[in-house]
Length: 107
Image 1 (cartoon, rainbow, N blue to C red):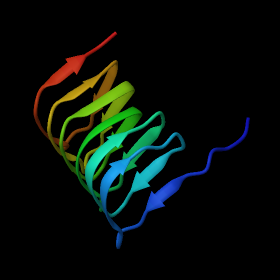
Image 2 (tube, rainbow, N blue to C red):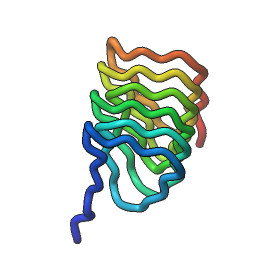
Image 3 (cartoon, rainbow, N blue to C red):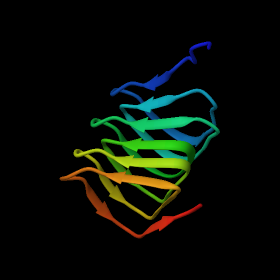
C-alpha cells in the first residue's frame, strides 16, 4: 500500500480560511476558519484551532473551539481542550482531557 503524504502546519504558522484535503494533516500552529476533509486531521498539543471540523478521523491534543464531526472516530488526548459539540461513530476521551459541549454517537 502506498504511504500518503502528511501536511504539517508548524508552530509558527497562522492560517485563516477554508481547509480541504484528503491526505493526513497535522496542525501544530494556529488555524481559524472551516475544515472540511475526506482525510484525517490531528491537532498537536501546541495547536490552536477555531473552526468547525468535518473529517474522517479527528485527533485533538491541543485547543479547539468549534464543533467536530467525524465520519469514523474522534479522539481527545489527555492534553486536549475542546469547546464545542462532537458527533461521530466512535469517541475516545482520555483522562484529563477538557471537553465542554455535547456528544452524539452515530451509526
